[in-house]
Image 1: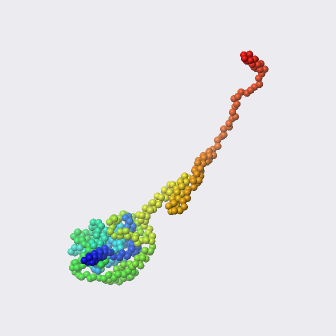
Image 2: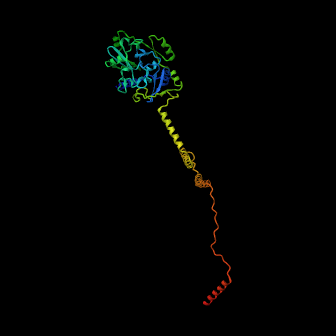
Image 3: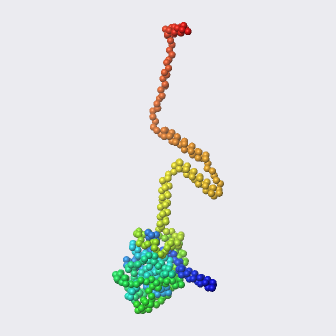
Length: 414
């Protein structure tokens, strides 16, 4: 009984791990960058997201228009006629931005196509899934917001033209799409089958009944060399050639050179916080590649350095500042030596006394120099002090006689 329980638990764990397993995500951002650069431009949006948009398209262009639908082991496979279709229709998501038009957000998970479906009795339609949509092995397609794509996102065609080689010539114009859009039914039918993502979409038998002919299942021929892929595109016929880069090509793309991405000039309408694809994986394979687009972190670092430089310029050192800085530096070195177990050097107090003496003598020297720098004034000549004592003059004869008489009178009194 215990063995049965253990075996059952082990099988359940294996099944859960298998359901949560995802296909190999070998492709890198660098490979997307180098491969798609000849056919469009990379833009760094204001929400810190790198996206790609194609060149040479008109205002009526939409994704999933130049190519054809084929039924395969992976469900409905979009076989694109565009040179960038191997990447933009099997990886990542499309979004019609208010300011940038159709932009492609990279992702590393492969699928036969990433679309949502609509249908009625007369027409079948599809539109690219937005970056808010992610695939879950247990639930299929899941949206991070309440998503309702507008009618101008959609491509509609009658059932009998659904698998036509030149299907783009039979697409409905926007006026007719707007008129029939409200009566169509919505459907997404993605699931996992042996580690393969399958786009079930609209049931093949239903489309065959509406179209009036049988849709054959085709095999997918995979190549891992881009040159072979380019050669096979010219004479593929009814074959489906699917290109998935080899490990060597991916490794070579990581050291191909610097990545130069244009900074967007307008504000994007894409909500970065709700994007379900490409989370924290935009630059994980970008080590060793020089980027010319500054990120928000680089801008903050540059601003911090400018502020520190400005503060240093404002702090012009003087004599007291040099003295204090020398004291602080000496204390810092002693603390580091004490913590690291090295010999501790006591500060030289004689040098401090010498600095104090220089500081006390300096004002006197400055005052003396200041007095010497003043213009010369006429000096006051000190006059010799006049003597106030009365000069002794020699006495005359009458004076001597009077003095004798006075002396005699004094003797008589005695």
